[in-house]
Length: 517
Length: 119
Ligand SMILES: [Fe+2]
Ligand SMILES: [Fe+2]
Image 1 (spheres, rainbow over the protein chains, first blue to last red):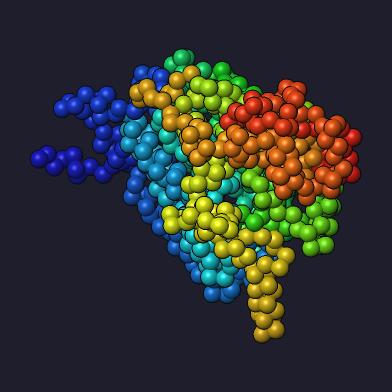
Image 2: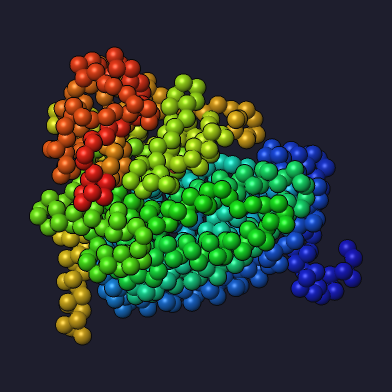
């Protein structure tokens, strides 16, 4: 062995090169196409992987050291929060319902993001891109873990946190985030990178994390704030990776442009539809509000996203067509979504409610064009009914969109009083959609979406009961059987916040804490 | 178009009518009454009389709306996949030409929802 090489101490840059690309080689026993079987079928042409600009310049040992330090701080904050009964310091127990939704809808996606990046981090031919993806795969696994740890403390005190992973695969509204990510991870590695690395991480992530983290901080939840900030410090790297991938594909071959543009269009819309739930959380579930969904959309999409697409214009990328519709819908979707959750509140693993008067006033002020005209009378009527003991629970299942799987509550872009119905026929079978954009996604790859696990249809097929249940038995109660299969405990996890166990416990505990103090 | 995939494949149609044990899906929405937030999904046998849909199924689903009682069914307008459509109440779903996953809407002229907001 030649010891002279080892004696030389490497600089940071060389060390990085040695630890990433230096570990890569051209295979000879097997052709490269056999070793990397998935990075060509999508039609993306890459001529020179060496042109990839590594966005992280981070080696695994440095990553490890830095993240370990971050986690130590995070767990110190969590311990302090938990030991001091920090959960009693949040604004109002209604806030905790936003955490239930987060844990069941978003945390499992962090884990799926881990799997997705681990997969792509194996399948891309370029070593630089592979290493970057592997690093992000670890980030996403950490995000899932820190969220689970942070929120596990709430499970000691509140309902609805007890079986989030089981619920994620079953509950009707959780099929929205689940199918979103399943769509991404079943695509090829390049589409995945556009779907999650670019459209989600770069274009939409602020709309998820800003309301969530500032919402947690605003509402006194140091625990959730801690994991939020910890995750957010990784986001800069994730965003850079997503953007680098877009630019790399576009620079490598002009034929890549239409494919990339198609993916950006698709995944911006998929993301926008999924963020309906986040917008609803901002406008309805945070007792102390950070900003309205409309404001968040304007700042983080219209302004920041607008600047980004201007920057990408030199590659020939244009702003997705669906943005025009999303911009109109910013004044509507959160109200439409909350009314839906409210009426299906018997089948949700969190509590729902009609906002208080000051909250309705806030919504009127934030949505001057639409709230009083279309939504306030609806909510006020339902609120009055509830006060008279006639709380509205719908017992008939909703029609869903075959693509985003959201109940068909979205209205025509040019008429908020008309539900938007779209349909396609494929091989003699009908499929229904909430919008032109969801229909377009289906029409482009129908054989993918005909397989969708639509919760409403699955219930009607009898696939959402426990195995020992007999639906033909006398007095069979399908809702009860479905909730049992979801592991939602009737009267504890679901129904209205008013009169809920969480509401009572929180008030009692806070009183006790106050009188002891 | 074909799915962008490593090799050609066809998807399993998860909601084909055979999976519904002799029943079929029918979606129904009430125009201008969005307090009921979305159109609803019903499961009916194709031999069911259309009048029974109206008399037995819809009241459970839409009856909670304060304007339900005010509906004049002789005035109601029906649409199938957005096109004007006339049901025969004494015929079955199948005889009315309703197939699995068809979507119907009904409009009730003069009724415009809570405080006239189409709620
Ligand atoms: Fe993450
Ligand atoms: Fe959709």
